[in-house]
Image 1 (cartoon, rainbow, N blue to C red):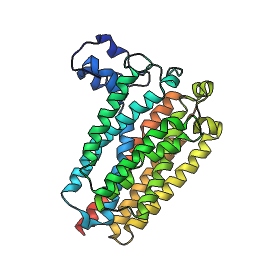
Image 2 (image 1 turned 60 degrees about the vertical axis):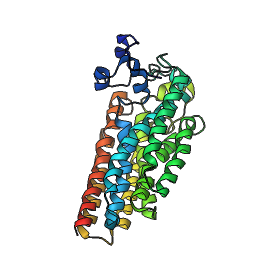
Image 3 (image 1 turned 90 degrees about the horizontal axis):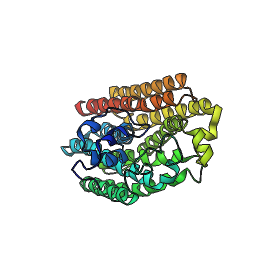
Image 4 (image 1 turned 120 degrees about the vertical axis):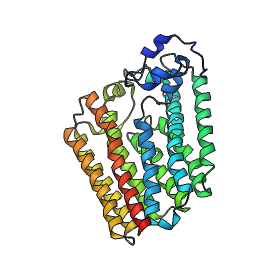
Length: 329
């Protein structure tokens, strides 16, 4: 476990993972002895937290837009608490992933510098750190209503399964999508107390979105993955990746549009327009990623992957506008 003193040599600050962004705030302000655990949690790489958080916000905002009478003081707490929970659960999930993949990570150029294979954190300490984060997240979850709590507990199965999916299927990105977008039904249930069909349709849209962005991400490791036998949609699709991404783009936008229409068709027209505008902007951003994609340029793939924070913010903001309109009218 990390300790608040600076017992680890300061040069550990320079021994960052290969896929980390240099000169992060954590390297300036976090004690050196904590750095391996911060890096296990990917706190220095927030894109994964965004990709876990944004579907939660989608679910809360669209649920509120569909049922403006559900607005209450606790709604603000939901918006804030899922952000805190996303940091904690993303951290716990990444720690578990690194523990489960420690042997694979040691064989891949991009990941062998992660804390466990690099010897900066022991597997036992990583497990303790994972449990600590999960318990803190549970404290937040138990402030929600019963349906949301049950959904939150159920999500643990998805988190546990994902690291092993790449060993048995060419579609591990589906399992990542199942886990990363679980915040949609959870957020919806936390806001209104139930999960209607349109919430599950939005959940499917999120899963396909994950297939889109994580296939791009996986192209960074395709050569190493082939050597060690790790499977991914990037290896499965190969040079046909752009065509598959076009299919995913079309499907995720269609499903998201359908969810918005079903949720808002009986509400104020401007709320529906705002919601669909968010879907259009989301699709436009994904299309831009596809146009510039170079699957043989790892740095460019990473840049496109990270740009999905902006893509996901577009419907989140649009759904918030739709909710505001529905409340006022």
